[in-house]
Amino acid sequence: MPAFPSSVLRPALLAVACLPALLYAGAPSPEQRSLPVTSEPHFLVIYRPAERFPSGSADDIAAALAASPTMAAHKQHLGEALARGVIALGGPIAHLGEAAGPAGGAIVYRGLDEAALQAFIAADPAIAQRLERAEVYRFVPALAPAP
Image (cartoon, rainbow, N blue to C red; front, side, top):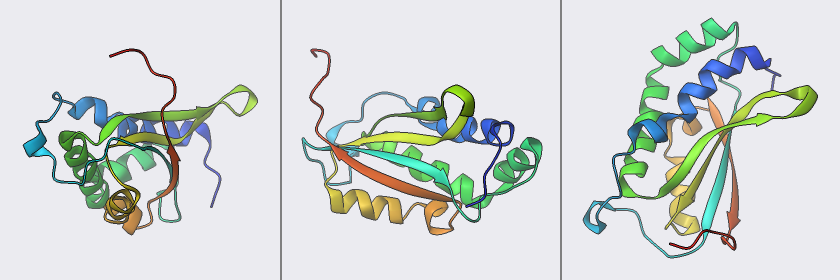
């Protein structure tokens, strides 16, 4: 995978990673959830640029992503999951220190079993078209504020 300078990825990743916060309209009712729901575990999915991610200047990448039907379908795919209540939170991730700058995006999924999550990720147009790749980690929350 080619290395992308921080100045190139920052606008594109910020736009994509902020989508869940922009789309959130409240907790869904049980009737709105169509994916299998479980109480545990949660999954952390790290999204990274893949082989077909656009290259060039920050402006070129931002323009390519904004015009991409694949990215529009990816945003819709995530928006539907957010509306179903299976996305707990998401946002950009960044390197710290000398390598400061964006490193991709992260989403915490909840209420899905592993098979349902893997199917959801495989159906994501950005994954299927190799604009992004996903790293999936399972965890059981052990630290959380009281409800």
